[in-house]
Length: 320
Image (cartoon, rainbow, N blue to C red; front, top):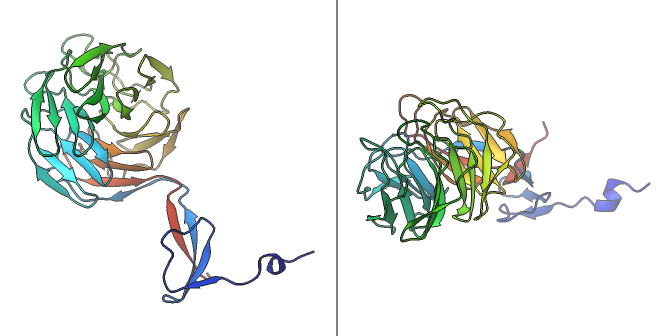
């Protein structure tokens, strides 16, 4: 029988520095540090500390990616994240909490919220400043929403004044006005919402309608630009405005002491946030997300960066 040595040989590549893009399973000897290393991938997701917001707050909105994000609202403050630190930029015209939005760090839309009452205000972001544009058809706050730019967004569910408090109303933004679309199957508020644009979104969890302090819901629904369809439930009810990131085939929901990962079919529990909190902001994807602000209590400025399973990892081999 052939031995491992006879089949694969005994030579290990010798390099003065680690390769920039190693392939999983690749092994090399680093002649500078005098150690043997190998390329692997992470097997579970993990949260790591990022740069704090300049102003800690809760019930705020968030859009963008892990290295290019925007936090806005609660009250009017807007901050921009570059992957390391937050910088204050121009405020919203109307300060409010319970706000949501969609888009990128340079092209976004923010909608809904609460001032002294529930509002329908919508504002467009051009990368420098906010401009007031046409209102939502239905005023609400702690709603769900997502989008790809300041001309493309969807708003759904949310808290409305008076019984039954939670709404199922869904609206699409085209850069000029909001148009009502088919409603969600289950009305709720304080839910998680994310997606690619206004034709593809996911709504998960939330608080059940019927009272101002409804219990946490497990329902998940997918929007395909025609209708909302019920899919597999969360493992646990999630209210109090969780953070969310990703698309209808690969998403992440996080808040309090839990994280759940969506693979397009079902939810799986994953590594919890280091700082448990509710009513936080979120941005990014299922493999590279951002969590910021929220209520611990009290309010926090903490930012955490998520790296999902399957991310590149370099391991150093030792003789112990």
